[in-house]
Amino acid sequence: MLEFMICSLLTIFPDYLFRRYVQGKRIGREINLYSMWFELRWGITACVILTLSLITMIFYFHPSAENATAVFRTVTILPETTGRVAEVFVGTNEKVPAGAPLFRLDDTEQKAAVETAQRRVTETDAEIEVTQTELAGADGVITQAQGAYQQALDEYETQVELNRRNPNVVAKREIERLQVAVQAKEGGVAAAVANKQTLQTKISSLLPAQKASAEAALAEAQVDLDKTVVRAGTAGTVQQFALRVGDVVNPMIRSAGILVPEDRRIGLVAGFGQIESQVIRKGMIAEATCIGKPFTIIPMVVTEVQSVIATGQVRPTEQLVDIQQMARPGTLTTYLEPLYEGQLAGIPPGSTCMANAYTSNHDELTHGGLSAPRWFFLHMVDAVGLVHAMILRLQAILLPVQTLVLSGH
Image (tube, rainbow, N blue to C red; front, top):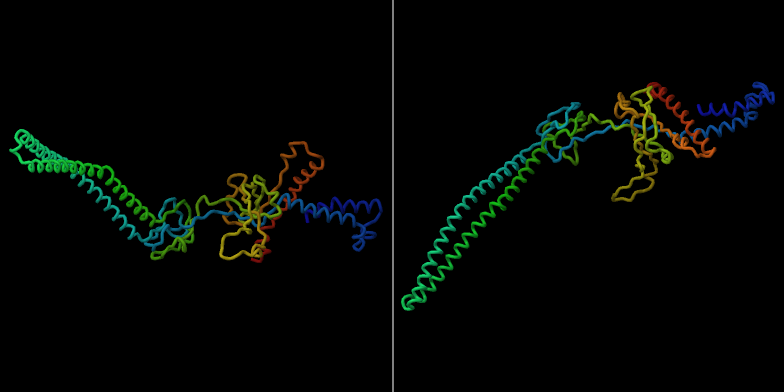
């Protein structure tokens, strides 16, 4: 209606002035209810065409969205493992700080695993002490083996020397026996030395590795035990938390509740028409009015424009997708944030809003080098944005009336 009134001042009104003061036709006589459509046909036709063109230009270059929402973030309260609730620490609508325990699952199995892992660590420490004691005894075994070897070697050399002086004194069989004994004692020394090296390797490599594995198993068991206590990942308010002792919680099927963070507000998410995809750009100035805060215009800025339309998404399924299932046209998801800090204060999260985005050609106009038709067109585009801004303010005024009176609630 506002566009029609503005356009009528440029078309119907001049046509009437021409008929009245040039042709001398007066309202109520030559121009009446029956002849008005013929007498003012040029002005009426031009008014309709100009009004449609103006409305098209306004809504295309300065798009509007009636399905905008003050979205906010939530965190699902879920355990990492399935279990039965053993203890609940908070209630519904209770504010909790970050890291506060919310509930605890039955941890009997996890505590047993921690105890088993702890005993393995203790067992490894004891084995290290025993091996160190064995290492100390290995030096004595080596000394004993070396003494026996030296004694056998001396006896063998004595018999060889006697046999050299007088071959008939010592039998050849006795010398061979002593030689075999020397070799056996030498093998005993090598075995004792090898046993000591084995113990050293066991102390320096094997047992520390076993202890590290036991400690890793203990840490893993402790992590599993800690997972039985579900904590708040961020400060916020617990909502829809109807969990009670004895309930079974499954992270794949049933959640425990919702945590609404304190820094929950994201901004406004508006759905603009697909036809405006060539106009909506990041950095555009916008305005919004919300039901939760009537009679208020909030200056906004477009921070992000989703590059895809959600209704066209396809995901792998066991059935082919019929295109009729996507027949409903989707909207262009756009994220808006307040131009100045704190302007969303007082608006309940989730409030329904209406938003306008405005095309600005100021940079192109100030750059210069434009042709006259282009310059005039860009000025006209920027000027008609005022009409849409006026419409949004009228909507902000009428919104409480439509919500409280005309909706019938």
